[in-house]
Length: 280
Image 1: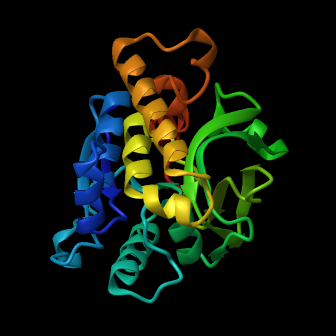
Image 2 (image 1 turned 180 degrees about the vertical axis):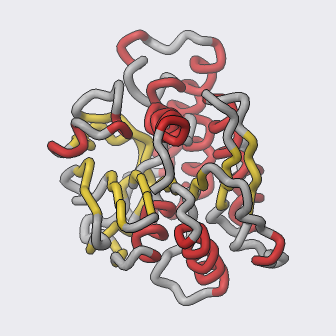
């Protein structure tokens, strides 16, 4: 791949990132940047943090960018907070400059709102963990975002909000019984967005840290029947991380989340598309 300059828009607050890091995960911006450069080492990433208290829009340059990615976040796009509005304003500026955008989870939701769609709490509540029933639509099967992926995906997920109305120019590329929009493309004028409701950038160590952050909440919300059950999931993710580090993941899992190249294929496909498609 040719070298690319990518803006990483970190959706989380400083406090959330600090807590995630304290449990052994990565801050969302740094983690996404590390994933991008592991896929394509020649990539240059600049991280913007619109949800931080010291954020100033004037400090973020959009000159010379080949693309932008929007990370996940613990925020809710429906909340009228400065941390959310700062991100809406920045992403609108990015789209207005015809910079291609990729988003994960919060990134999908935020981009859809900026482009005229809506986001609402899911009637099915929280979707979390390894989800195995995200399936491509007819349009998704032929879309370059999913080149090299099976028709039904195994993904890392954590979200309780979802896209409830897609923007003009949208095509739904994947869905499941929990959320009707698990992947989406929007092409309108000079704006191009690809996004997924799950987290191809998350490794098992990130998921273990998330489970530790939400350990008591998972119990209180009835997601798991006991803290012991939550702890079993934490240990399972930590074990998966150790196997990934050692290169000993079971072969049967190498098409799913236990294998870096498979897990991050959507991001790699987007980076490849950036290098071969002219700007609209």
